[in-house]
Length: 177
Image (tube, rainbow, N blue to C red; front, top):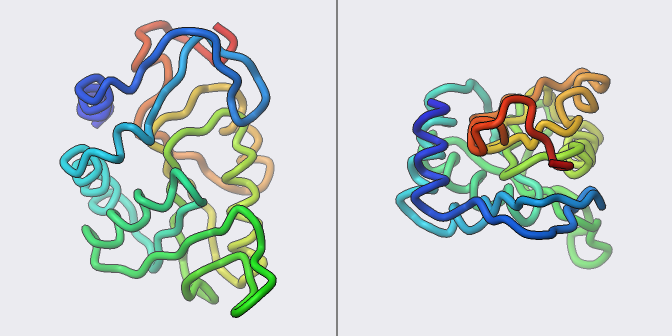
């Protein structure tokens, strides 16, 4: 599976080199543009099929923005409902941070890329507050910069489809290369 993910990422030109500031605030000499990949229908469908076949869940959820297309695609592949976790709680209309029914459901959280795991931690906390059972996060690529350890402290298993070192070809590569 790792080989297939790396091939998909390379086909779509997901790896860029330069000087980047990541969502975590850290600087990096490379950027993994998974959002670029998931805008390609064929690539998105291949990734979603791998996730849908491998994991057991009642609802798949994604954190806005990168996790949402993944959640929708996995939902379509698995024929199971999806939920969206807003980046900010809505205070008008039907207020709340979660769109979709997650209460008392086994929820699989999907994300495009993790560095420290901050966005998926906020996502799992929001899901748990809404009554969901969530213990696994599937990420297309883990940058190997602490997300797995940070999630483990909250009882959450990080399941990367690929790691930065798989893509860059350097064992132990991280965001501060």
